[in-house]
Amino acid sequence: MFKITTIPGDGIGQEVMKPTLEILETLNAKFDFIPQEAGKECYKKNGTNLPIETINSCKESDSTLFGAVTSIPEQKSAIVTLRRELDLYINQRPIKSYNNLDINFTIIRENSEGLYSHLEEDNGDEAIAIRKITYKGSERICKYAFDYATKIKKEKVTAAHKANVLPLTDGVFKSSFYKVAESYPNIKANDYYIDAMAMYLITNPAQFDVIVTTNLFGDILSDQGGGLLGSLGLIPSANIGEDNGLFEPVHGSAPDIAGQNKANPIAMVLSGCLMLEFLGLEDDAKKIQNVIEDIIHEEKIKTPDLGGNNNTQDMCDEIIRKL
Ligand code: ATP
Image (cartoon, rainbow, N blue to C red; front, side, top):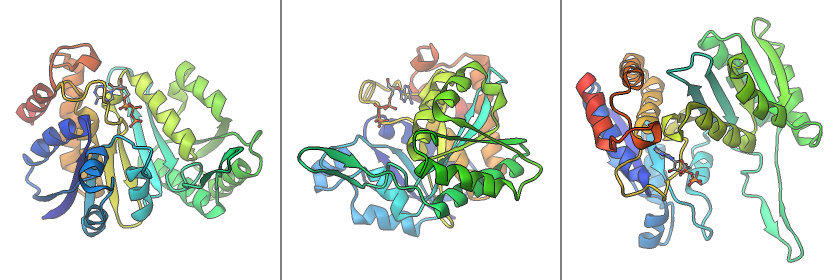
C-alpha cells in the first residue's frame, strides 16, 4: 500500500485530480490517498495557502500528487515552498509529441535556487531580486541530467544559460555542466544561450534529447514545450529529491476555463504515471501512457484544447475503458 498525499488545489487542479485518482484506482497496486489543502481557496478558509498539516503529510507520504494552485500576492508560492520543504531539487518535464516524432525531449530544470530563492526586496526606490546559483546545486542537477540521459539511452545533454550577460551566476552553471560532462564520455554535451535555445526549440526541436537549465529558464522553456505540443494540457512534471517526489501538471489553475469541465486531464494523468515510475510501478505507468498515446492518435475523444468538444470526464472514461 502506497501512501499518497493528494493536493487538488484551485481551479482546474480540482477538476483534473479527480479523474487521475479514478484511473489510478483501477490498477492492481493499492494506494491510500490522503487529501490535503493548499492554494487560494485554502487561504480564504484557513488564512494560509500552505497549512503545516499539508507539508507534514507530504513529508510522511511515499509521494504527493499536486493539481494546481492560484497564486496570491500576500503569500509565498505554495508550490515553491513545498519544493523547498521537501528538498525536491529536480524538476523533470518530458515534452513528447504523439503525432510528431521530431519532438521528444526532456527538460531538467533546477528547482531550488535561481530567481526562485524568495530573495526579493523593495527598498523604496528600487526593487531587487537576487539570483542565487551555487556550484553544489548546479553540479547535482547536471549530474542528474547526464544520469537520466544514460538511463533512457539518449545521446546528448544540452545546457541552456545566459553566461554572456550573467558571467558569474551562469558562469557557475556552465562550468559545472562541463565539469560533470567529463564523467560521461559517451554522452555528447553542448550548450546554447537561452535566447538561441528558444528559437531552436521551434526551428529544430529534433536536435534535443535532454535539456538542463536553471530555474526560471526551465519554467519558460516548458511552457514553450506546451506550445510545441499544442496544449499545456499534455505536459506532466516530476519534482524529485533524494527520498521524496511530488508530481504535478506543468499547467496552472487556468481560471479562464475553471468550473466548465473542459480541462484536459492528460497532463495530470501523465504526472500520475511519472509518480508510478518513481514508486517502481513502471509497467502500470507504461500501460496508461500507451492508452493515452492511442487516444491522441485516434482523435475520437478530444477536449477543446485539442480541437474537440469532449469534456474532462469523457477523457477519463475513455482512458478507463481502454485500460
Ligand atoms: P500559472 O500562473 O499558475 O501558471 P496561468 O493562468 O498563467 O497560471 P495556466 O493556468 O497554465 O497559466 O493556463 C495557461 C493557458 O493554458 C490558459 O488559457 C488555460 O486555459 C490553458 N490550459 C492550461 N491547462 C489546461 C488544461 N489542462 N486543459 C486545457 N487548457 C489548459
